[in-house]
Image 1 (spheres, rainbow, N blue to C red):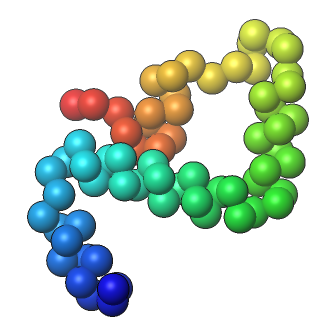
Image 2: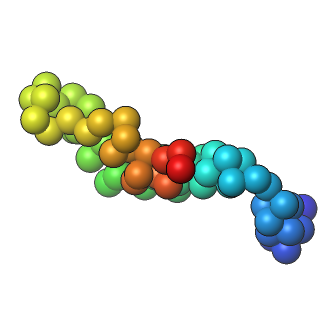
Length: 67
């Protein structure tokens, strides 16, 4: 499948579908980046609640926040 065909298909997605696709693409890109993976591991292992992110923070970061 060509990139052009993918782009046309993506243009036809509803906003919720595009948000899901964007989150998936970010997860693919992040998973391939060893520095990012190490940083995420460090953050996951952080036991200080002051340093935790909310689900809303994550939605904003990934662009998946519902309007």
